[in-house]
Amino acid sequence: MSEHVIDTLNRAQQVIPVKIISDTDKIDWEPYVLIVATLSLLAAVIIPFAQKWYEEYRTKRSFKFYFKKQLGLVLNLLTSNKIEYIKPSVKDNPEKHLYTPTEFSSKLEADFKEFKEAVQPRTIFTLLLNLQQFMQFVFQLRHSLMQIDFDKLTERTLEHGKELSKDELKKTYGIILIYESFISISLFHDRFGEMKTIKREMKEKVWVGLKLDKDILQSQTLLNQDLLHLNNNERSIFEITQMMRIVEEKTKEYFDYDNLQKKRRPLPVINK
Image 1: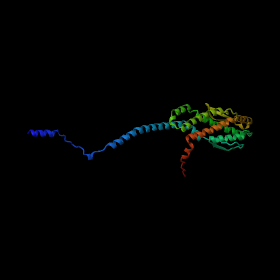
Image 2: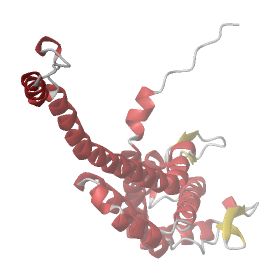
Image 3: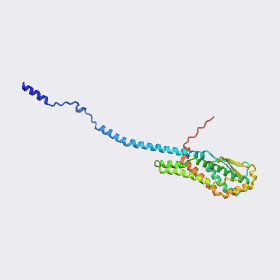
């Protein structure tokens, strides 16, 4: 019996291995863990970068929208309004045309060179009238520009300068400089507010129209005096006309106006 007990004790001390999962059913998790780790690492790098890029893009877009909104009235004034031009003539019904500011300024320069020594009252009158109508548009444009807070625009540009390219910064600072120059140049060279024949009608410091005497064409002396005043200030006329062309050109360039016009679809023609 003692031999039986000893034999039982020996068996109890033996370790019997139990195989719960066979080798054929074992899954190799190592590649999957590696993929997950790689994706996590990429996400940790890419997501912050993408968020930063989107924030910069959104800020840049918001700044551009804000900047163009401030200048939108100027573009609208330059592209939507036209100035009535009267061809210098001795006819009772001279030719009339509507021109853009740039077209009108070129016509005014050419007429002044041709008729600055005119003697016919009608010719002198149309030359003076064209000048005053052009100067009224210049006043309207200057008035619109003076409503813009250029100091604030410059401050916002400095604030977001790092988000803009060199070309964008150059265009932004350039258009501000051009507008500020136009204000000062047009103010300094507008020396035609005290003309004797074609007077400006002002209301609360705003130019609202022109006042003409009924017998203006009989006032040969006054017409000659005003023409002499134009000749004495010839440089001022050309300074303003040239600056006007620069403003229109650079404004359209900043807004990419010509390309936008090309992309516009023509309105469909409705046949009645």
